[in-house]
Length: 171
Length: 296
Image (cartoon, rainbow over all chains, first blue to last red; front, side):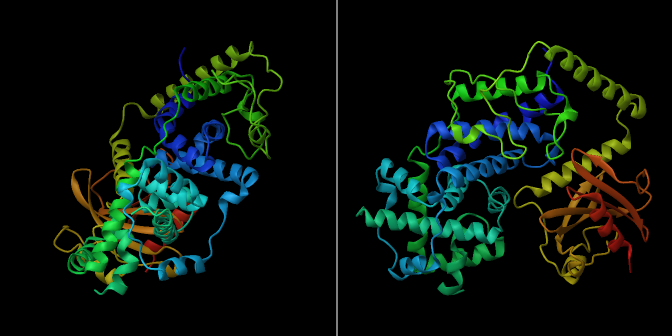
């Protein structure tokens, strides 16, 4: 059975990046079942909007759709996850001085919990940077924010993680 | 540089996002400053922890299968491209409720309902699948016809098509990280002289930030067998490559815009130089930049 042009395009543009799509969805949704729903919906959206694909980075394009689908889902089902952290909180963390914790010696499950504890937008930036290796520019495209915001979310997300390890008394 | 200046750059440096000049400054400072070196070590151990804690999830095989199944079903279901609302792109049809492989039939109720042009409801009602083969046949026929028309009109890949393809490739490659500019400056008095000695012609370089097309920088590139200048402009979030070479060296289809793989291409001859603009920007705006380039 011959594939249509669109099915071929879908195979080439979407399927190779399904792992990255799932990883992002899983870290945003917090569980497998919802992550699968999100990826399913996002993939079908991608299929419908194939003609809107402008060339360039297909992985970024797909992940933009995934993250939009995921955040819509979060807003509806878990709005608390998108909590904003006030600037003052970060100033307090800075003022408290840098923590001495060495997270590389920390148990993997604690690292996992730490990342899960982050507000969604910081978690997203760290997942895209540290786990998927996207550049600032690509993360900016996916999250639809300026590069400066990406930088700030990464810096603050990292600070929050270090704070988490410190508070757990990991030395 | 002192610590106060280094601080805001530390993360970008750590992520390899700084230009080479500033990266060197930061590296030198970190080497000599114990406080900043400690901060760097903290970042490193955090990175190690994140990368070695098995935090990467991969798509289950059942999900891949069920996505493929949905896509196949979407293409072969009875919906035609024209029946969708204006907000969705043609050709995709509505989503038929294909079974999701090994997953149970219970859908998460939150995602099942459409929201203004979203997915059709899944798991409710069945569309007749028997009529699918006719649409598939028509789709195949339409594709074959389009291919035939293409080859009748254009014959084998012409020299012009080859150049256009080369330009798209050069454009896409330049958009990959760290390869956009050789000289990053919005100052035409920095960019224009940079090309001296590198090219056998002098490209006109102007910044159009006031008109909404700021100059991002310049780059040396290679097209149709010779070095060319690439001037990079930005329009909102879109990047535009303007390739420049002496006029008369390539055969030109005229000033009509072309489209290739989703990119718009525009060619103009200005003052004895050939300008080829390429971007994912829409062509009226690309035309606006071309007009600016042509103006005095």
